[in-house]
Image (cartoon, rainbow, N blue to C red):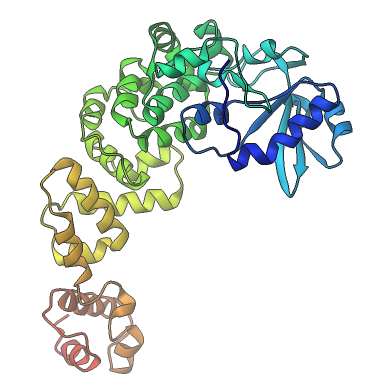
Length: 396
């Protein structure tokens, strides 16, 4: 029987919870992604614990608990200043919204709990001594880098349609391949993705974009038809295929990924990212980068100035995917060597000009704009004397 070294801090700190539950007469295991990642020798983050103890029984075993999701069987156990989610073995039924169960039934049997999980590689359980419990051939699938639904894939995707996006995201993150029956079930049920909130779909898509096997995940997104039910991607197979064919180097940021996606879709980033319910900061950053990308590979100094440092970094990185021999460093150096990088860097401001006799109003803004452009272009030194002299000669 396979065993895992549980010396990783996240496991080691939580082992006492498993031991206390077992000492009280219950079963308890680490489950889910932490077990999978440990077997793949990936960093462990949050650990999830499943137990045969019912919520009230968990609360009797531990002195400090918080009812975080007790109706679904989850109690947070506080140990040494850290909270650990402990969830009772359960079965689920009645998924009318294709996302959450209408009914949850607590059970004592680990197998009943594990068989409701999404993929076999996520249906592994781990005892406190490091022994792996594998009831659905998850270890074999893990060894083959194979993603396979637990039991009937159609049933799993009807229970939670977001699992289809999780499948293509895991492809991108882990480099796994989705086995044939699971792939076919995704294709058959792709339309259910429209039932899921955009925010949840976007969370999975963003993680897909940043994966080391992005091309593989995108290919499945297209081939299964999932893309047809994602915001603003319907009918965009050719553009998505071109996007997927970019060099495989992982995107260093979401800004780079969305900038390139907007470029290939030929969609303005504002409406595109808003449809995906992305944060305003990401939308603004992508808009600046897309504008500058359109000026590549030889943007003007003024275009670099208007874009700003973050957009210069994003757009030059994006251009290297479109033009592998592009010299991003030279453009970034040009930006760094600009005389000024923001309006605040200018040696004068509106108040200075008003004191010098420029009337408030449109002319004031026009004069500041002209002076800023002249400084950026190297036509004027960034000194108050030179700028005031130039403002007096302003023909506006």
